[in-house]
Image (cartoon, rainbow, N blue to C red; front, side):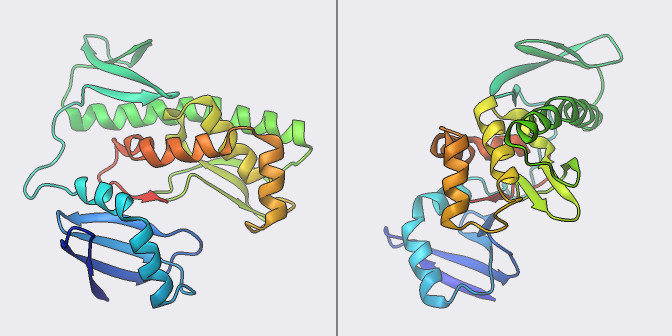
Amino acid sequence: MRLTHTLSDGLNIFIDLKRSAKKNIILRPLSANSIHLNIPPYINHKQLQSWLAKNEAIIRKILSRAPTVGTTLENMPEHIRYLGEYHSLHIHKLPDITHTPPNILLPDMPWSQQKIQLRHYLIERAAEILLTRLHHHAENLSLIPAAMALSNAKTFWGVCRSQTGIRLNWRLIGAPDFVIDYICIHELCHIPHPNHSKPFWAMVNRHTPHTNQAKQWLKQYGHELFLLDDTNNQAV
């Protein structure tokens, strides 16, 4: 379904609407004046219009990321985020990636191949760092999930299910410690509280003092963690 929405300055934008999201409203840029919007089925037209009006700044930010027709990221970017800090990307003559903060040195090859190798490197670091932190918080809170693993999700930072356990988005390796800790604790608190009820948020806030700061960081910088992807989806 395609809708037309008018922003506060009179600009008309097009919204390709899909009702399949389970919890979050998910936005993706299509062009400079159109977005794809995935919403939960229970949100009615009035609630959607209210959300659009209240979140115009987010909509404008998503529109600003729209791909330019006929262009793709063909060259190595200047930097990426690693544990919250910018790390410059450089080329060296060795066959493997070398990490010497604040630099990451990549083998001399086309960016398309460097990107694949860099993704593999970061996923390995994510397995070492993210899952270790999740295990640490699980023991401290005495909340042990059925399993702990990484996810390649494009729109969620973490998920907790009773049968499959907790999966963390590997791209969180680019986030600072306090954001990683928040996501770990957030998902662990879903073990006793599978919804986002008041008791759930009370438990989250009791165990992490930086919930709001972490949410704000993800809203402001979360899209940068998808730099090595072909699309730029982000949950809000």
